[in-house]
Length: 182
Image (tube, rainbow, N blue to C red):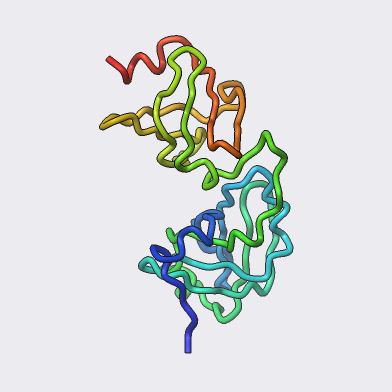
């Protein structure tokens, strides 16, 4: 019997590690784009979960080789490129219990969802809805009333974080927040 977990019900127990983006070679290997500051820290994982129709399906890893932000992975029981093709475009998850502890001034993307956002000039500008993973630049999506405020996730814009009180402090460039408040 195949063990699966419901992503919607268990969302708070997992974090998105990346995405299966392409096949590699003729043995059914896949390339995983890893969305983490230090992808090399995941070189010892022996399994991950793949989101298949909002169910997290566990896949055991036969071999993994990390190169930059990508991992070349040989999954157990996937021996043909055709089988690997069925997994492409799907998100990869790991249990939150496997995350390492970060220093107080660092955070995982999933951690800040719901945090109040205080801008240096504008004060309270809403709550973090999510961090959008975009090529070249991650974006903080903030909800203020019925408006979305999009702010590039850049170290120079984050002036602090208070995890205990769930507050993210920003120092955005002049005019950026004004675009959304007009």
